[in-house]
Image (cartoon, rainbow, N blue to C red; front, side, top):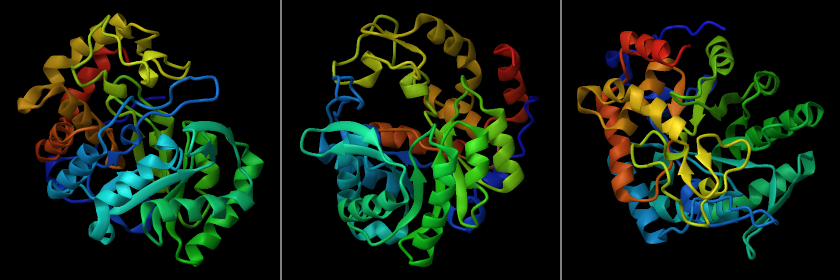
Length: 340
């Protein structure tokens, strides 16, 4: 599929972006809260978190993001087996009504053992999962509720649409979405009147033209998971630099490219990133800020949600907002360098 040029401009970028067809306004940048969930694992010991965290620092980082104009926070019930939601709820406190909160459901887990095991795509489970998330977040509604089963069954998902509409009618959620990289699944959920978005993988190294085209056609928000390629687009990873044992990137599953077991970043990926460095760091941007600028240039529907574990990371990510998107010419140059 041909990659279309951006319609984003610095002038329009100064305004908040809209969460799909809802009319809900959010900052152009959201914050993803997977990393602040801390350590958790699959039953076989496969790490699913980003390693150890300092909860107090996480709270400070969220509040610093608020100070810098970030109004959109994305988490999931399974991140840290509930811990991410609890930390986010604590950090937001009295500011809850000033922000837009997204969370997800579909995975089963044990908060006590920090083990995630199994999935549940039944209509009956949705309400139980939401009730638990609301308690952990310390709120009585969620702005965006997302199905967290990327390869979930289409027939089951069709039934979940009706449940989500019921939750909207009851005021428990304002909108819903599917977190999936499959355009067909995203299109199915988009049939729902209050479907607002698709959450999917998108970064300068991993484009998603079909999902972007769907979002633009149907007026959905493109919420960008892995906008910094799990840290490969920050300039802080080097080949042979192992990560801590509790970090998913140290034992990467098949769906996580760019990392090799026990040895850190893949040298080939780092070489490709280095080839883009001069463009991404234009206008005095850091590499990470340039990667976010690429996403904003890619489409006016994109809302990247980089992860964070410190105030410094929050400040760097939020600092990208002032610099706006890359230019159309820079977008074209990057596509040429990557052979797209």
